[in-house]
Image (cartoon, rainbow, N blue to C red; front, side, top):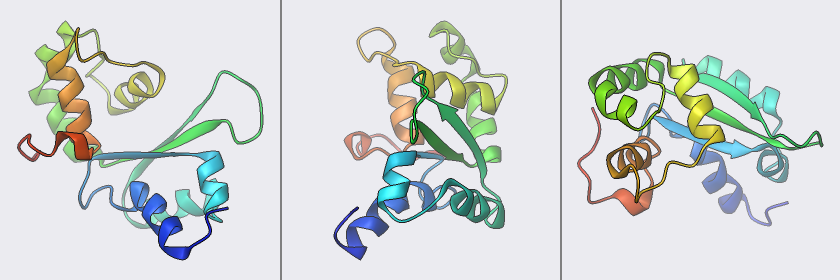
Length: 137
């Protein structure tokens, strides 16, 4: 369990800032548990805030193995349409937001092989390593 309320809130912001400061966010179930939250509580939060969610289970069949993704449907859809050609060239599905989330949740997109797709994904997560790239939208 995270020892301070501030640390727990910082971790939970990975999901809570979706639709405000980022397009996609995710946390593992073990992190949610460590923050004192359940998947059901966070899904309720997503529904209240018009955020889509998707649970991607890890291959191993054990408790707390998997990740809960939040995403802003309209913004993500618009970006996928705009970047469709680039994503297709990187073999990343762009015709469905859910398929896109599932793909990036299960595959690592390599910067050396598909740099544009790699940077786009970083921007979608509002990853601090990508701060020099223009904001999305």
